[in-house]
Amino acid sequence: MYTAQGKIDKSGPSAMLIQYAPLVRRLALQMIAKLPASVELDDLIQVGMLGLLEAAGRYQDDQSAKFETYATQRIRGAMLDELRANDWVSRGLRQSSRSVASAVQAQENKRGRAPTEGEIAEQLQMSLDSYQHLLQEIHGCQLVYYDDFDHNEQDNNFLDRQNQGEASLLNEPLSQLLKGDFRRQLIDAIERLPERERLLLSLYYDEELNLREIGAVMEVTQSRVCQLHSQAISRLRASLSESIETMAG
Image 1: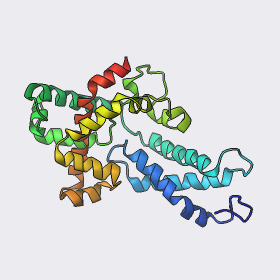
Image 2: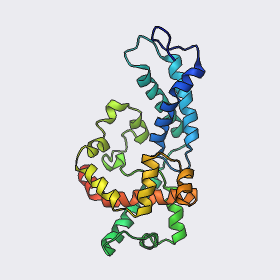
Image 3: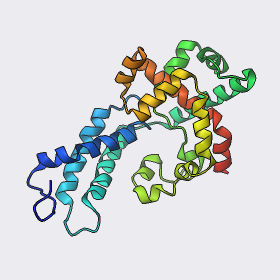
Image 4: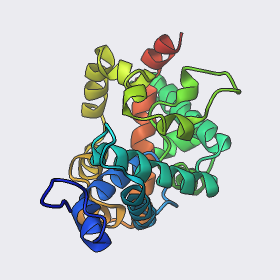
């Protein structure tokens, strides 16, 4: 809360948590969309709240940055530190995600339509059960990876780059992609998804429902939601692979 003089009131941490809880939740939702199913939203929010308290304790009223801007960086940083400590997404899972996308693309080229799960599993030389298990493991892997654009092993990883602040992120490859034809191509690719997968993405990203809530709407289990989400992202990645490769140069 603020004092009558318009300054941060540090005497009431409970009031501070209440006022900025929506900010913490918003940042957690933005981040968890890029993370595997093993990461719980409530865990990110709890860590973010600790970051908010730290921000309130360290913020100086005479700083040039607004408190919300300062707190955003502290909250995001606390979440990223927690993810680093818990070994976020391994390089192996990212490679598996790319393999699924390649299989989708191969089957689309072969059949001239969106392939079924069984057809993708066949392309990967896996059983359907094994393929669905893989989909659940790679849930949260991204549509576009930073290593698609930069293959230098010495560079900062994804989590480090996420913590550089909004000004730096404006120059990141995905931000640049979304300003051009890639945005239109992404919209077209989403429209070509099977109806259930389009619905899932809408519930997840537009309505901001969690996995359990989406499962209730779609009348499937939470694990099935993870599988369908991973498959939708793999289909999008397959559809946009040429654009991604062109941008990667």
